[in-house]
Length: 125
Image (cartoon, rainbow, N blue to C red):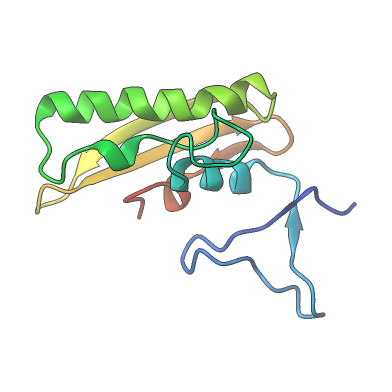
């Protein structure tokens, strides 16, 4: 069964070629999650709920800003929950040795079950 969305390579952040001149498709919410977190909030034409506000966080993060980052991630996930693409999610933050913020998480995709979405998130490994 063909998918409903183009599949994204979490390393290159490009759509994946299927080897026949087209792109691979997926039935998971991975692409929607990627676009939700990589788009600035209110910058997607026609959809004010699209995107995430993480770009507004300062480069050097305090503990309070890390908590704010989690709230911003929850805000970004809300439209995906409302649309029925995701049934549940678990997101958390971690800092590397240089103090940079990374977001790690899993989602309960309504079509594919549990997915590790860390590679699709800002700062994800």
